Image (cartoon, rainbow, N blue to C red; front, side, top):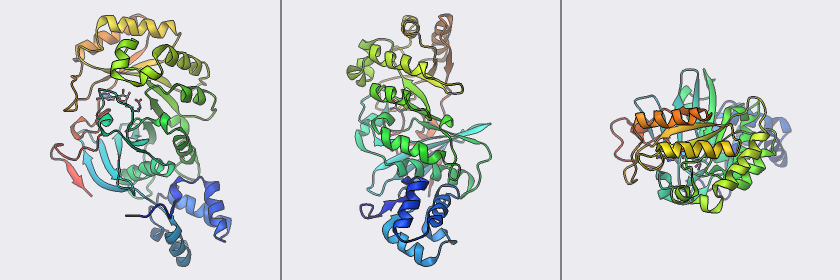
Length: 364
Ligand code: SAH
């Protein structure tokens, strides 16, 4: 295990920070840029692989710094090509990342926390509780590991890469680290994944929605709703007691006003059979969004089952009916196709599951 308290994780530094770290060790600035490119562009995960650095420098770096801190414990491959990585932090906490191949692009779903403090009743991650928030380096590293696994070390991705902050954790309870990771990943000399290719999902941390509204270079935003009334939302997503729908949708309205061309803003609505999927609830949801003058699209996500959770996914016909009611009231909506359900990689299934996931386990 790496003793991280003594070493600095270089994947969590911006290019400028890395340059000044290197200068402090008495090395010239260009070495800092070289190491940044090695980590973020060539996606190298050890100093030993950086053969263009002098051996003495590599040895010194090994004593004071780390080029990677996450280790992949297991890797699960779905029938649909989705891959789930179960990783461990240096202090032995689980981190999960999902790679979702699509025809025209690939999507990497990263986690912002190990576990999650929110107690959404339909989500398996809630059962872990919060273990801790991830550092910027740990967020960036998940993307590096997934890309290297999919394409080979440092190989250029053949398609575009989109990122979604929809893995374990509440990204807006780890806002500063998240935004720092977003800035690092945008560097043209590094991963070069720009904010408009990133979507971050929140259960509704209102102050951070307002904060994001004031940031010019920002990721796209998604808001998890799950219920059209406070009464039901209080029950399904306890965070609603702190920031109820009026307040949340007020902040959403303000955010929507700041949208620039090309930016995406969406709602997510997990469909739970017999709980939040009636015709009446579709009308309530449409009226609620219309009353707040919100134009964002609603993504309907059929519930992904997870054994201890007391819910069933809404039947496809119910989802279609719900969607057509929303649309009849002018709300655009879209039914999201679940990916990686067979390997516990789908929304709400990330709980560091290591057993009972069938045949396609690939240990690395
Ligand atoms: N904490 C953030 C990020 C997690 S995103 C948030 O709540 O937005 C995960 C998305 O998956 C959320 O929209 C959530 O509502 C949805 N989700 C959670 N559990 C699910 C499940 N079992 N089936 C389908 N979707 C689920």
